[in-house]
Length: 199
Length: 77
Image (cartoon, rainbow over all chains, first blue to last red):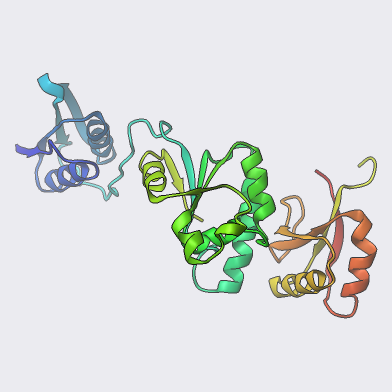
């Protein structure tokens, strides 16, 4: 039996190590120290067709025993890493450009307008929207997307606009929707996001 | 449908036609909005121009002979 000590490691490391180990061994014991890793390793084991057994030990340690079913080949399963409570953080939409997708700027400019129009019509709206780099151009006066952003703001969506970026493009006095924000707010919001969507 | 629609949508054969029409309407200061084609309407091109009924005549007149319009449909919300 192979023992994998994945304590002190954040996802996806425990899952990656466990997967490598079970591909080379019939039986693997994985030691983790958080519930997210526990759930993700167990889920991976089930997907790989292993017998999965886990025990909670003292000090927040969990031991997971993965046993390959006799003679069964290990199927190819992508490493998946899901936070134990995905809905805990806010639903965040990030616009890092004033376009949607790469390749053709004219088309990208049309697509971002269509995207924001449709987003504004969704029943489930984001909790927070963050605009940085050329994305800030979507929030200023004269922008084709301003009305949709105002609709989103009126519906309670928090709109954070990068102040450094507004300054760089010299449009700080033209902000039409949202509030001037900073890297502290942006990093903090991105870090606690339950869902992150970038068009 | 009862009563008059709140908006009309103008459909085009291609995205480039919609963009050309939009630039003409912008220059003519006619209120409109470029939106994705509503789900209930099928069109080859995924975007269309939405406008209020009172602007329909002026919009059609301005685009006449300049951009090929595929269809104009009432928008029922």
